[in-house]
Length: 487
Image (tube, rainbow, N blue to C red):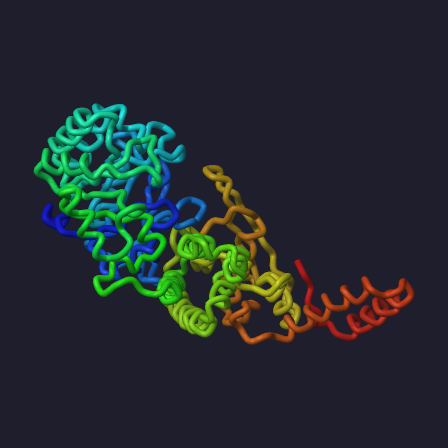
């Protein structure tokens, strides 16, 4: 990316919890020229490992907890800027080198006034330490091959602001984004277009104007109005884009219902966590949050429930079915090629899987299905051996079935989750059902439902009736050795 790439651009601003992959891709789809990630702290990225997610076609930076901290994909290649929260040149450089081949540029947050950013001297706290700003930016500019930018707020006086901007320019950064408000000012305060203009006139590098959503930018044509008022090279949009990302459409803003559907499609395709999807949709709905639709969205506890609200259940199912088929192919390929991550025991068959209870009916687990299969095949019941990793106290389990061992390559935060993951590996390798919602309902699931219904009926029966029902149930249990047992 050349310096000229920061000129004449409309840019999605970095926004915490909003600037994740689905929102960035949607902004690009509607016409944004560049998109910034949400601010991510250097210490968090230092713990991550880079993973190429073949199932989704993404590059994921994954924390020890297996949570994806940052995700990108080819669709935003050359147009995504990673924003970092940092207060240390060495840490900043280490993180930048980890990410530089997967992003178009690295940005340092020097403008966010919130506590989560200013802790440890990051964000707007850096504005009080120009020497540290210089060290961080110099280390990045000289240490990586990709462009470096930073985002600042204006200082108490114009003289201080211009002095800071000129010092930043001398470090060799490719552009500077300026939020036209002071550290203590909030969106309801007027944006200082005159100060942004003074900065643009004082430096030769591109200046990206930010802060016009509240009072200026209501539609696409207003973006140029704001750019002209500030004399900036480009315009960065935050709140207006969060409310309706089609603000980037030259042909005009789309109805919110259409935008929401476009966003949900992308979120599903990239397996975005439902809590983040819900958060972004709530920002779009705004004043509609108190309507019946808004309240149901707020109460949603899964992507499936969100899709049901917006009549997208069939789309969700088709994507899940397609992904499950692809996952099976990839898992079998891993098995055939003996790809097993960090496995040091060739006698253990491994796959990179995790147990997600949202994918299973209530009180149905892979361990239950594996136990039932062993009983039907007259095999000893599965034996689980679990170890805990000292570094982060996470668990991983090996299950032995028919004298063969199975294990997930991934670590889990609890012993129970690790055992379920091991059971999934065994079931998939053996080509058995595991009880997922996406599978046709099995006899075992139906029996479990009957058992649960019986328990509910017992609660409403007299003591004598309940005793008779339990006696009848126990007789059936002795006659049928294929009963399903919860672990």
